[in-house]
Image (cartoon, rainbow, N blue to C red):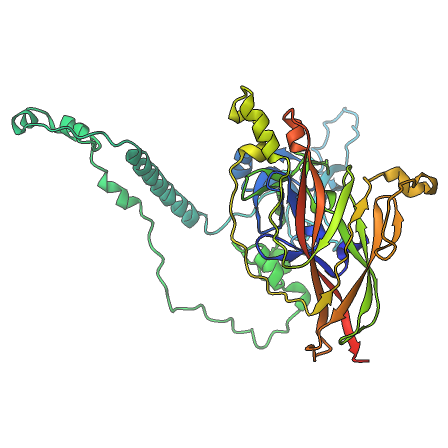
Length: 495
């Protein structure tokens, strides 16, 4: 997996027009399309503390202000603080009365304090008293602007309740029936307001009194201390900009004024396709688990392409390019390389047959596979800013790759596939991998040798959709087309 950190020499085209490597895209099995990070929506599944692995629901996380009550961060280096035990002297007890034996008095007791093992900061440096229990109970620093913040929160809660009442009132639109004037005057005002669809009581006008006092800008600034130009500055005792921004409510100026902050919760997210609204990635809810319930990463469903080697590129000269294809699925696939202007519409060869079988039977249309039941979503293609500056000679034959077999990588004798490969195309084959030979010719119009040589083609491969098999149907075989752009190198000269 070292190629994950390498430059993006092979990029796949998403439907939104962005180019991404195969390690950063998804493949939706319902849409049969590539989805990048811009084509999926993020959803928060769970909150957890990265230190104690405490998992809490969203309602409790809001009450705790998205912070863990047991873990603290160092205010200097922002690492997790650990609890250390120490000994503290105990006040001497009263003198025993005459005739009583001297009892053993413990001169010390066990106390606990916070300590950072990276920068050696401790709660004792900030003057925080030690605690007698290891579970915590350290005093928290009070926000000096808590009164103003609570007033703003209460005011916006009132606005939210008023907006909610207005939305609920709009949902109900009673029909206004004709009422004679004589009958109308015989009703009370409350009944008349109810008949015409208005609230019985008019909105309370006293809510304006709950409006917080607006902030007033002032030009008065506190004067600088008299010794600011004469006293020497010790940088080790002054907080950095990052440390101050970590505590925006206080922004302490000196190191000894820093206080430990509760560690913030992390979230586990799931990615959902914006077109069909199906999950393409969903992790396990357990904080200790690194497994995924759903992981439709592209390198599990789409053949991976790597550049093996390329001859020196010269203007107007043909150079040999070797590409390596790998089949990650459990089914045999056939790969065909097509020109770059080929349409990317996915062909469903078995869709008509399945529809005819279902119309003859008595099954409900709601029981059809999701690939057939779902209405197609049309998406307008976007412009691509990358322009190829070299010609690629397309092969006349296709490439067949067997299914993935992890044991075959360690067994050289098990490769017994008898494929009738074109010797001019296939150079090497082992297991579910194969290397093919192509030829690249840079355009004569490229005068700048610093620009990289980019080629592109459309890869058509057979994909077995197992979504239909989960709904008691046979697996559906489709031909998926993906557009790729390869950066093969730079020009070395004309001759």
